Length: 72
Image 1: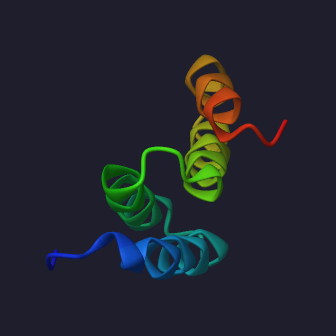
Image 2: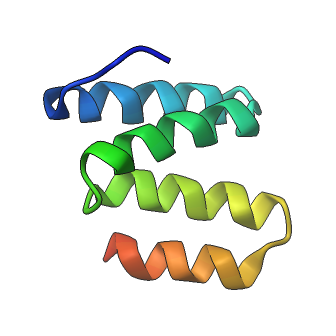
């Protein structure tokens, strides 16, 4: 992946959402992780990770992500 500045976080999250909506969960997770690497408090990326973990039946890990997202 390319090098990104913190200003790219919303774009990385958006790319992750697009991939998630296409069912490309592994690829989406990479973009959420990159967004969180640049901004560990980006709620949308935590929420996206939680959704993917739920899809894989990893509910305890998903709840940790949702807790970090401060959305729920």
